[in-house]
Length: 81
Image 1 (tube, rainbow, N blue to C red):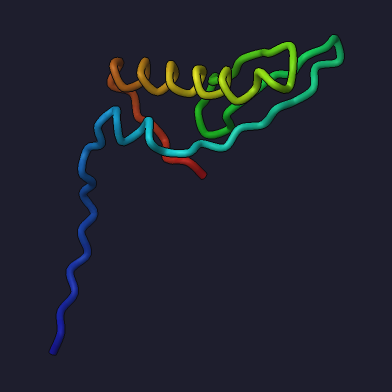
Image 2 (image 1 turned 90 degrees about the vertical axis):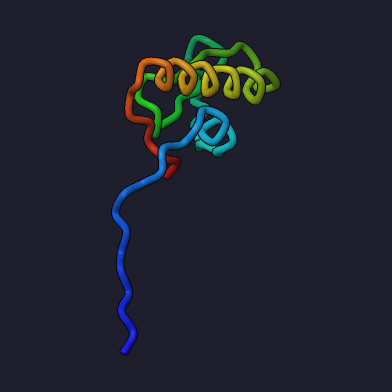
């Protein structure tokens, strides 16, 4: 007979673990020009850029700052969808 036990406890992640995760984002064209970049999994995490070429760097910076702030404040950080 084999018995399998399920563990429900999770191991706390470090900020380095969170920063290594890939969170999806949406780049939404702004009618007045530029783009709004929003991370659906990270409430309130967004930035605005003037050109499409700025999206990768600014999205990464917004994500990193959001994660670092949430981690320092002891907030629950959702995993990427």
